[in-house]
Image (cartoon, rainbow, N blue to C red; front, top):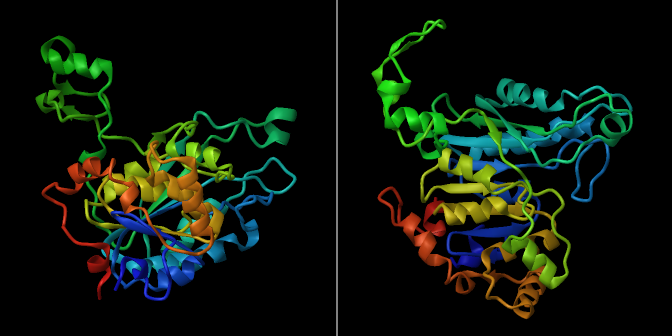
Length: 354
């Protein structure tokens, strides 16, 4: 079996050192994976908005049924300790300043009917998000801008693989002072809340436990993907999430060598992060132009526009491109991650072998 045939019935759009991107229906592609093979599904599907977007979102009334089809199959493909992380934006009911409850009905449906557990609810705060919806926020000024997405972390069992020490937040300046001189800034005692805070509180653990509110701006303007789109004069994906979002969950919920899958890959931010973090990855996207442009994420600034155009066209012509030869400058960084003790030296083909 060649790298172009990681999925038995579908040819890859492109392959890299750690993964492969495919163009096609995500349900059909997901069915080709062995059961119990995926450690993490990290994805952001088209949201259930009232206005149709160019990337193909569903109407609210049919959205939950549509998404449940994918979730049922994801549950089947996940390892026993695997996770399914779903980023969903909120929306309003049509014509009135009242919020839709669709994104809250989804975890109830997934847990009650499919068998998932809601391991934890996260909230992604994007401080750079523009005010919306225009009618209620900008014109009538009767609502605050919508800057938070719900990010549901589903698991197949009550005890999925997870290690919060891999995603510790930097200590505040105040905490750094306390660690430098505990006696000056801190005195062990019982707090009014009833918590007995002892001397262990002043131990340096390398960072603080992160909260489930993730503040990550989505304001990238000059990365390799955008530079490639501009150089080749192709349209960039209009709804990309920032790399820090999948990075958090990939580090938190998987180990180097594990398989990460994105069902609605778009510009393939998840695949790029998984590659950098030494994870095996698969990306599914049904728009061939988005898939072709996403290949720019795995190139370098030394790759000329003519070569990028050739790669883009070849993918659009449904011919597999092997990007490994373009990754030579990035491989030392990847090797530094994948050579860690916990990394299993297996190819993606070996990983998916029944």
